[in-house]
Amino acid sequence: MNTFLSCDWGTSSFRLRLVNAENITVLAEITGALGIAALHNEWIKTGGPEKDRLSFYRQYLGEQVGEMEKKCGFSLAGVTMVLSGMASSSIGMMDIPYKELPYVIGNNELERRIIAPSGDFSHKMIVIAGLRTGIDVLRGEETMLEGCGLMNAADGRQWDEALYIFPGTHSKHISVQNGTAWNFHTYMTGEFFDLLSNKSILSGSVQKNEWGAQPENDIYFGRGVRDAAVANILNLAFYVRGNQLLGGVSPTKNYHYLSGLLIGSELRGVHSTQHAIILVCNKALKSQYEKALEYLGRSADTYYINADDALIRGQAGILLDNR
Image 1: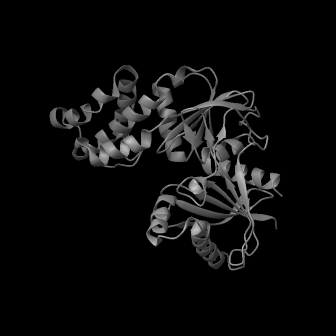
Image 2: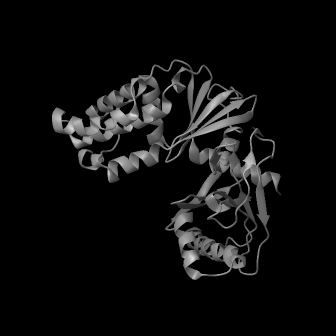
Image 3: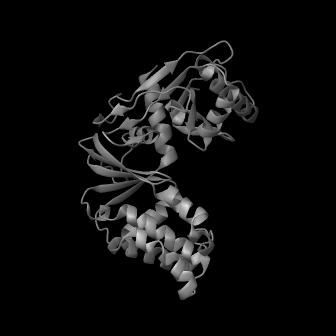
């Protein structure tokens, strides 16, 4: 069987999958305890020389492969590993320069480093770098975008001209025309939500409540989206506190109002584009972003691609380019 190890290594998360490269199916999956930031802190504590940095990171990867072997019940020696995300950053295994836009999807243009196996690590590694404009950067989404280029819409159309939205801690909006990424913008939606809901004066006015847990959640989420479309977020954010103190709004409802404010602020103006919008994310965020676009009056086509599927397809394509 033609397999590879898919590593998605974020700032605060680590995920390793064993993938069948022929039919792009996940055979096994594990998550690790250390994202890049945490492992980088461990590396700094060692005080070791820069030349030993790769070996330090590779040791952790070897431990995770060992856990995967226990789960699978067979050896993975010699299986190639493809790494996306922060592994190529200044706090990762090595700092690989960003590919500057424009970037032609599917044209084998992404920057990457190929690292040969070593004595104690039998896996060839392909480490993928990110993209940059003159003022913005991303890492990880470039691989998902590459994977999106290998996937069609449900009606068989190719998305050669579209706005790709990658919701998350730092949401990315990537503009694609004629199969080429020309520009992108970052929105700190998820991080601002975390800061406001956990570390600001608003923290006492919100309480985490899962999307869809109560019918009223959607009402307050929609109210937040619509408010964000017509007013300033710096003013609106304080309404969360006023909602509780003066309006008797429960912290669980306020949680979704705040979410609506931030997502609505991110999507403000985006809904009016006549190009297709492609949401690349998990199903929970898909529901929220689709609802937000609906509340904002979106009428043109909106499609969805699962982020994990896009990532794996992108990595598989890059693997094929580097056989």
